[in-house]
Amino acid sequence: LFSGRIEFIKSAPSLKFLPDPDVPEIAFAGRSNVGKSSLLNALTGRKSIARTSVTPGRTQELNFFEVGDPTVMQLVDMPGYGFAKAPPAVTEQWRKLVRDFLRGRVVLKRVLLLIDARHGIKDVDNDMMRMLDEAAVGYRVVLTKADKIKAEELEKVTAETIAAARKRTAAYPEVLVTSSEKKMGIEELRAAVLADSEI
Ligand code: GTP
Ligand code: MG
Image 1: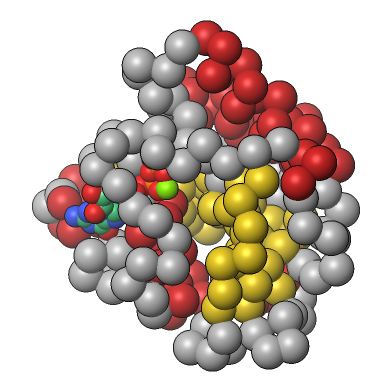
Image 2: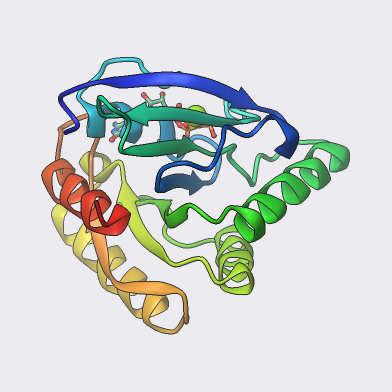
């Protein structure tokens, strides 16, 4: 499926621009620069279907991608959070957009919550998990940039992340370990996305 048709369809700066809720959706969430757009590219085997950036906070809208011909699911690249230089008005706008999307989107099957393997779960990630819990949206925790740390560090952060996920109601207990750069954990991620979309 992921090697077939993938098409960027729209960028929604607010809820009134959302595409019709016709197919199951899986969304990618996480701190700015955690690697959401890169992982979406790796998942679909494309170099740049989702725009990646060295500048944190570049993606400020919900970006929708159709998968399959005919379309059987949509992937959503969510705007990142925890951007240090973000003015309060931007943070507030982000919060409203994300909260309303999570609460109101009936076709949203799962969120992939990305955590940088070098940093582990931060306060802003706990805030995000709280929003997901409150919206009753199930999520999987996905460690990113696994290529950037040593094997023993990766083992430690994975164990800590699993322990943290187990404490939360809406979180899957398993944690996926990935590297978009080294194409690590991508097959497992594809299987998880397929299972979550239930198609
Ligand atoms: P925002 O849209 O700003 O929230 O960022 P994002 O989460 O979409 O991150 P993006 O995919 O744009 O990646 C940010 C930076 O991290 C880029 O410079 C990527 O090349 C780099 N990056 C992403 N994934 C990996 C990875 O698996 N390994 C390494 N080494 N670098 C990565
Ligand atoms: Mg992005």
